[in-house]
Length: 447
Image (cartoon, rainbow, N blue to C red; front, side, top):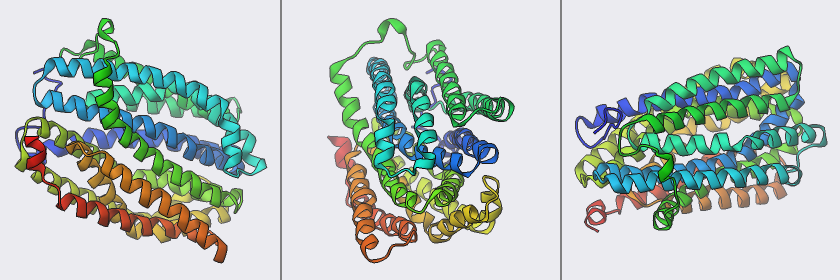
């Protein structure tokens, strides 16, 4: 086994999960930094309308990026199983098929993102004063879609092998590039929101390229060999079967946020900017959640391949415990420091108040959202990705749309867009907990 291939099938459960999760945590931190850099610099130098444009485009972008992140996650589960079972040939075929899927996805996203930007943003009810900037940001971002698609694909392969360090290094580099380019284009050259999208696109291309180089040079079963890049239809079906539910799940979450954003848009640019700023900060709060959740998926998938039921259960208990505690502690801290943090994005009192109001209604229920993500990660690792997908589709999409549609008839208030989160987090948490408690892992391993 190559020293960079870190199987999580032996040694201390706690140590394996923590050591794998720490680079993920730092990587997600830098990911959030270069996501927030656009909003922070745009809000400071281009104003509230420009910040609103980036915020409303961001929800739509995350819908599509989240889909490919889910596909990569599903591919990672398949690759992790092969590596856990020490099946070198299976891992090789899975890796190269995954890359082909990513290449096809990159081409599709370039065309879809640039052609349908304006009609979709109009459908969301984006105000005229921010529509032009929103379309510009969205289209430029998707012209470089090969960067975010292939980055997710390559990182999924590396993390499946237990390598969370190299993606961290490359994210650090790309985050620095993004911030430098943002400042150079917007502050130095006085360009508009399109420059922020261009800076993000360039930085993502750099990180994707560096991940690809690492896969080309590593000497392990998951090495990328250009001559072996071909589509294995049988393997592609397995990857899609595992990854499509995760991709749909991510897109469902983003789609529900797009729907909620359309309701927020009705309250004007100040509400869009304030809540958009809050969402950027909230992304930092969920870094421990997403990091340990991904660590759990990798841990569970590798140990499923190694057929270690008791080790899986110990890892699940430990991982979920850390996720719940960290989410709620950070939620309380967010409530305390919300106003000064929101003020970093925009000094306008109305903007800050909208962001703070959203914060007050949701942060005390972060543990429920965290639990839902944790259970979804565990079930994907076990090989049951359709279950969290269905739960997210029903609870986080259908129920949210029904709730907002009904309450809008009787109570025309932005508060309904805040309340919808804790209500649906509760429903999804209870549903996934009941399913997991009834799951027979031993039977799955024997099958």
